[in-house]
Amino acid sequence: MSGMQRLFLLIFVVIFCAGAVFAQRDLGTITGTITDPQGAVIPSARIVITEDATGLTYEVQAGDTGEYVRPLLKPGTYTVTAEAPGFRRVAQKNVVVVGGDRVGVPITLPVGELTETVQITAEAPALQTESTVLGVNLNSKAISNLPMGGQRIFAFLARLSPGVIPAEPGARDAVGGGFSANGVRSNGQNNFLLNGVDNNVNVIDFLNQTAYVVGPPLEGIGDLQVLTSGYNAEYGRGAGGVLNVNLKSGTNQLHGELWEVLQNDKLNANRWEYNKAGRTRGPFRQNQFGAAAGGPIIKNRFFIFGDYQGTRIASSGGSVQNLGYGGFYTIPTAAITRGRESHPPADLSRTLVTAASIPSPRRR
Image 1 (tube, rainbow, N blue to C red):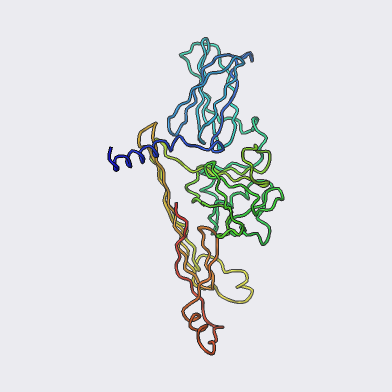
Image 2 (tube, helix red, strand yellow):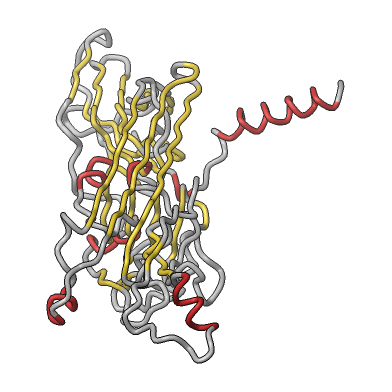
């Protein structure tokens, strides 16, 4: 085998196996008990769990006590079907699983022929009976529709959870969406996960004023969990909150989004301190734009998804916010540079500081 053939084989193996590599905290569990109309357990019932978006199926068998457990399920919406000899088949639809969650789906099988199927289309109860975790879960629809203003940074969504407030004044990650959960300081005390994998910055000074490494665009997020207390020891690391982000994936249906968020000095209100000083707002233009798309490569087997986001800012006044990470940059004009180098120094009190258009350094 030639070197080029070995290279193509290695690339194929990496791509093919990538779908099977998951972090435990990225996955969920469905569990429950199969009973008859009188409440007696039905042992050895057959349970088939189907992911609605991809058609992937998982089969388990109930034990002698009628209980079943199926771990390692990707976040998504599932249909749980149970059947046993002498009973009608029952299908429970709209079972929503999020990363790290444990969903209870008990099923009662009516007496009848196995060829008959009873479909339960109502959504599963929202009450969590299988876990003591406190926090909030946000799906992709909620994330895309929430008004984020100029701070389209996923970490700001953590503030929607009870017990979470913005980072303490002066915190190094305050600009990038830092938060305090249940009174614990934000600096280094929160745990950021991306698809269940560590996404924390391991330096003290937070060079980009964020405590996380990768900041995905909102439209690329499938669901987001904020855990504030009661979570398992597997999360570890911090005494504060856990922000677990699961990215979207491809499905059997082609789907995608295009977006642009426009802000400028004509649409945005003047800054409060400018109004107080009687100043008008200088030129300002900000464009955040991007696209996300996904679909099947092999139906029910192999899928693809990707996204892109760019940020362009042109402003005046001395500082430019980099929304990719949340940091600020000050850019002097050529006049200021010349004035600093002149002898004696020039009077720059009326020199306008302008900022060039800067793309966000974050790319994924």
